[in-house]
Length: 123
Image (cartoon, rainbow, N blue to C red):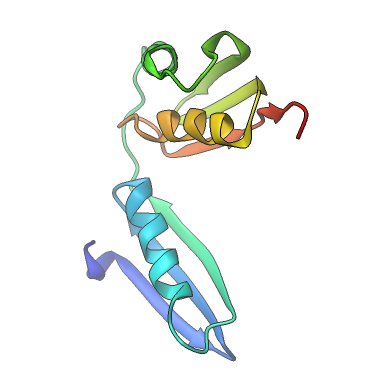
């Protein structure tokens, strides 16, 4: 991860991360690394993803990724895209299925935010 794009500040056992990362997995890694530091009680994640252009076929590509994933019942999950924000809705049978749908959305290179509104049935 490029350290020059992430600013870390610590005060009273709280770490605040600001700046930007290119990919969601980098953002998660920064938060996880900060959480693992001895004495840290809480991490404020104020990281943003580097802006990127939207693509007209983003929803279709995410939908295809859901269909390819054997762990998902893709017919139960709807995908909406506005700009670079993806909204997932519908229902999943398990928390793992819901998480797989969210991961599929984050893997798109044209996504900077995912709103996961999928409801887990029988949870």
